[in-house]
Image 1 (tube, rainbow, N blue to C red):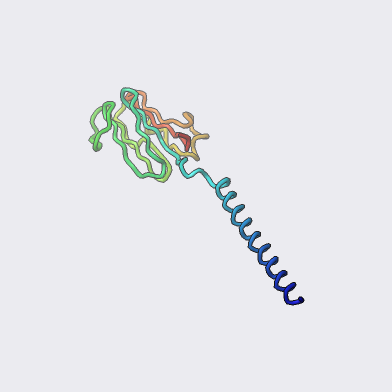
Image 2: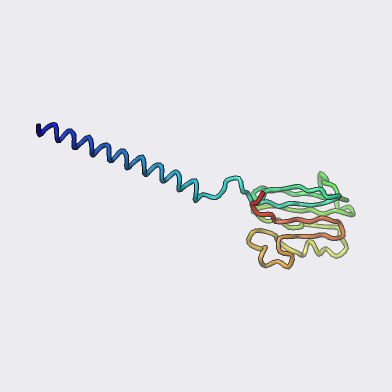
Length: 140
């Protein structure tokens, strides 16, 4: 009789431990899903050029985009109407431009960290060439 109670007590104890472990794992999974950042929301830059055309480049990419006379070009040549945009390490900037005063180049680096301190906020704009770069964050 005593041996049967001991076995029953062990069985109850093991079931309680198993239930507690299952509950712990379930709560952990729920917390991870709720608290983790959305994996699909990657920071990005939207480059606008030409006749309302745009190109999205994710901030975690390393890329050079050349826009010449309202279209994407293969490589920089320094020809008239050209902007070279560099994206690297979560930052974007107008590397070179053939516009008259190079204001877009002087606008500096655009990133999540700099949008609050820039005169144009989330934008780099080359008005003479109709080219802009917008920091669009992780929103779709």
